[in-house]
Length: 398
Ligand SMILES: C[S@@+](CC[C@H](N)C(=O)[O-])C[C@H]1O[C@@H](n2cnc3c(N)ncnc32)[C@H](O)[C@@H]1O
Image 1: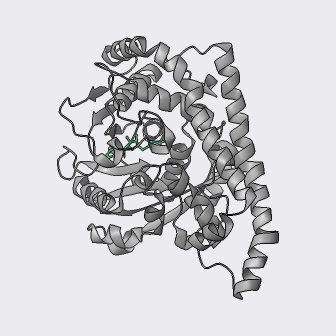
Image 2: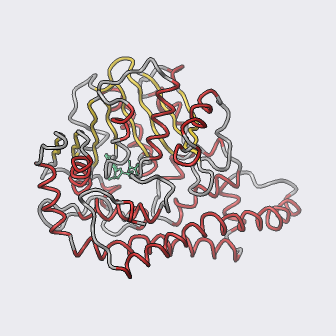
Image 3: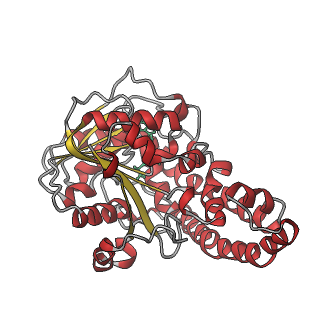
């Protein structure tokens, strides 16, 4: 729900709107935990055994599971419930954001200019061209996507995403939606104590909830976030100023940034690559390599690749590519990121991948204990929004 929005860009929802948000949040918890569990039971007890009887083998991969499962009522019911609750997420928060749209824009400008709590910066570009793979879609069924602008200094899409994400994640991401980056950066710091970043960049930062935890981890570092969505970077900066966290936001394309060579110690992204076509991901890796200092580290949080998953888990995580307007998800999870990273110029033997237990769910001690556990990636909780979630990330050094 949106009760967690505790900064000065908060919008006021009516009681009916709040009730609707609680309802949608509960429904999503039911769909992603109970109904998904039930669907898996039907697969294991009924559909998979009959596939094996006919074919004399188990399904080879996610697409074969998908094809076999598609005619089943439970799959149709689950998919229909997920699509509907996804649309309801955005609908439950949009009325309040739209009512306050122009006021939010004014508040954002005041916060961005105020220097009393933080002294960050924000830069948008009136001539910026949003890549077609963003501008032609309403990604994950969010009307207006990340970039649509209706008036000067519009921040609406940032506010829709912030409030909607609160409903969408039903508390899994923590009170500032920080859990993924908080967990990943805590794990990273413990595992790589030799890295002491002076400058960190977050690609595809949207509201900055994946950017700001780096400042908690490395308080002396200069923190930057970029996004193609003008409303997102304006909103991100206002939100950060309100929290008193100095950070810098720019409207830029991660494939072609304006930063000088050798600028950053860490180039990070969170839930970003799967929304980018594979050929552009290769461009993002090359650009990250260019702007990293020698010895700098590139890190990406994502869902784990299909090569690490059972056929069923691969099918389950690829659902969004077919039904949730995330058309590049599956191709990304099928690709060989390790080879693409090496092609982009990173040191071949520097590739790493880890699973960080959610700090929000398991606590910091459990997270630090996991730092030496290298084989936890093939676990059906990894990347799966639901009880017991863990976060997968990978990267390499320049
Ligand atoms: C799923 S959101 C992830 C937001 C955030 N990092 C998080 O952890 O939730 C993906 C973001 O990437 C941005 N994006 C997509 N393509 C981009 C590109 N080429 N360069 C920069 N940002 C991009 C979108 O506008 C969107 O805000």
